[in-house]
Amino acid sequence: MSLTKNNQIGNMNRRHFLKTTAGVGAGLTASSALTSLSPLTRKASAAEGPTFAKGNFNWLTWDDHFFPKQLVEAANDHGIKANPSLFSDNSEAFLKVQQMGGKQIDMVSGDSLWVPKFYEEDLIEPFDLWSLKSSKGLYDMALFDLPFFQTGDGRQLGYPFGWSPVVIAYNPKYVTNDPTSWDVLWDPKYRRKVTLELQPFDVMAMMGKSLGYDKVFNMNAYQIKAAKQQLIDLLPNMLRWVEQSSEVVSMFANEEVWLATVNLGFEDRVKEAGGPEIKTFAPKEGVIGWMDGEMIVKDAVNRDVALNWLDKMPTGEWVAKNFLEFGRPLLNRSAYHWLVKNGHEDRAKRYLFDKPELALKMSMKGPSEDMEGTISAFNEALATGG
Image (cartoon, rainbow, N blue to C red; front, side):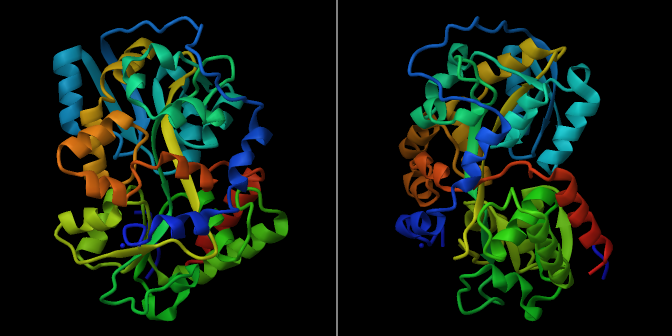
């Protein structure tokens, strides 16, 4: 079959998570290689506050950053009409913003070290986070401890949203013996029973992690070649690539696949989709992770409308409901309080919603320093057909 485009960390305790992620934070320090951003000081920004406006804005994002009902509320109550369009990989969004710019895209979502890359390439513009009412609900670490989201002079590059390590999910009905290693993805027993999201740089980084490499977003030519072969060896077990995490949920719910890389909260998402019991684990060789946010595109035609969305719509209630729907923890303290008040404290704690500082223990997603070599290796691997 050819490939087409189209208590785990639920049960794993927090000490295990810290042990698994300790020492793999090298990806985070790579932000200094992208841009010389420094942490925001603990005072309100002196930057000029944004202007808010009603109207339409175009948003390049993932399918788990909004609800249809949230879009309706924004339009009816605030006169903000969001026009979301979806992408799969950060590199895809980067290329689209390069090509289309602010005339066609006003706001774009992005992960971790991709944010300073957008800024370095003059694709986004800073804004005043402190002037947004919704910023009052963010965790302190989201305001003060994310230098790759900040310019260092009181301005913000990305509105902090969510985070998660990338763990492995499996169906214990078919995958037995509670695996602990990336190696399980290559087991010949699981031919055509694996799926991954179509995110080339992240996939290559995961191949690197499976080989025991540390700086997987900064692999040398030898390591990229080895990661390419690792991907080629994985292809016989791949059923197909997917573009959004919701597709992975459906494939597990109907038992079409048995193994995948996923974010926190996946077990409950499958259960609520009518699927079987699912387990997850963080591979002993280490994990990659992400922290994402919303960026304002340089010279965006509808900049003030996009900022109005960020001011009005990431409320504690909406962010909490987003967590209940999509599983991974979010960087919003008000949302955590809403979850506790409404009977979801256990679920929030199981998926580390109250521990945002753990996000800084991961190897953060970002562009490879050899972007051309990495994407070429990925494409060449897929061209083999598996």
